[in-house]
Length: 281
Ligand SMILES: [Zn+2]
Image (cartoon, rainbow, N blue to C red; front, side):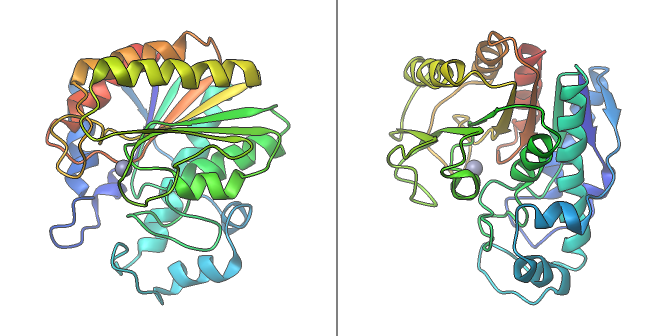
């Protein structure tokens, strides 16, 4: 198991924003105590960004010339976002080399569309990683998004693409309000507030059957941990131990796999991630 992370991800903060540096820092410290091994990513290139995003959007983040309530203007955020996307690329490459891997970076990415950002996301890390694997001819790829929020950005980027299957389990109604039904290669499995482990895992089983039928070469996971029962932003009621079960079910597909951190805002994020990793390798 390789954990891709960088202390540089802890450097930026915006007031009391829930997407805080402590999220990644505390997970890093927790995993260090458990003797995981870490890899330092390099920033991705602008060319990598442009495989997914428009030049206009890339330039907006680069110059800081943007305004969005969810997206605070942060000095050097372009550099942090490049590093997070670079982490996704490294994590995907590790998976291809046979190492199950996890990307512990921020900012997250799954709400970023081709031309718009939102929901704490600047560039769509998983989309950049998947595009790179497709370009290298690694075969069809399934993206499983288990963040509590719908991965609207990832869906919009891959909608209608035959070599990608996007499957999302998410709470509904909840930000961003999309993902109510399945369209073509994008399977959406919305869950009501108050969903507990048993019903969640039944829905995951449904998701994994769709993925198995697609016969992907690789599985990429947008791993949000805001489905945890104590998460302050959401209302799905999973326990820390549920994440081991989720990861074990993904592992049963027996495919090269990697996961990227998306959301997760509770104080128990380190244990949620740790429990996930126990089942993932
Ligand atoms: Zn989320």
